[in-house]
Image (tube, rainbow, N blue to C red; front, side, top):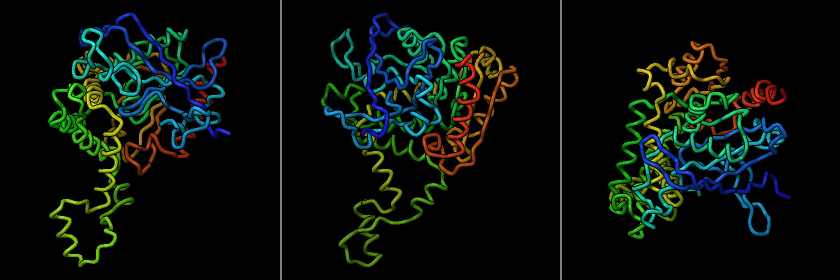
Length: 394
């Protein structure tokens, strides 16, 4: 018996060109989607889940092999949040996960062929913004026959998309759940993204973004980029508790401590457990993620700033929103700090919008939005049961 939902991806092809905020036009393109639950007769119970940087359409459930058996460790990235009886209950809601344009998990992106050249897009893939993703998602809903979302939900970059939905299509969204997010990136956040990008573009195997033509991949740069990013996702408390200053054991080596340290220094071997952990994360990431995708998505993060067109006034920018909001932040998240969520809350309140806000005291840093926390999950469960469900029933 399969212990969770069966996740079956679908591909939607769009032949109408998509005009992007940059002025470029993306010709025919594809979006890969997974859905969970059943769309009701009124088509009023749809919940769109927007993914963060390195996630995908595979939000919940398990993937299966050719024999129909669930693959080990194949659960979706938010499987603890979405499913039967979970905070976002797929027995009540029709949940949609979509892989964004420019990603590397099936939707049209830099690894796909440019119809104008017959070669992989590579660095020639057009610049994307959060607003472009939302526009493409709206077209997807049109194709699915869904006019109005019961809710749009996301964490981190996904939360930015949820916020943008309420501004670009205010009358198509009833509720927005924005978790561990921000109205724009701070200079420090942009700086971290830029250092990660420089690690990639200075990799000798990058070849100006056309590495696929050279039959190579800039894995060294991607490893470093992931290591930099991963540091910012964790809190200092979690790193100290999990790793501290513990050294990596060297099995089979009978030596004095001084000799062992000298050997590690000279050979640049991993010395501390935190180093081993970061290298492992970097190696794993470089094996499945695309470098051009990383560059595109981090730039989209940098560009997002709905207040920019309103002289920096977030209050003016959010005046268009009509949805009700739930915002959640985590005390030790220094990448998207609670203060950033409170900026959104304040601007919405100044516009007289219906806003619920929770700041959860959790030690896990930015990654907390993906983890099991009974208080956090119960909060989301209650919001969907008491707020979202009422309007779906109505």
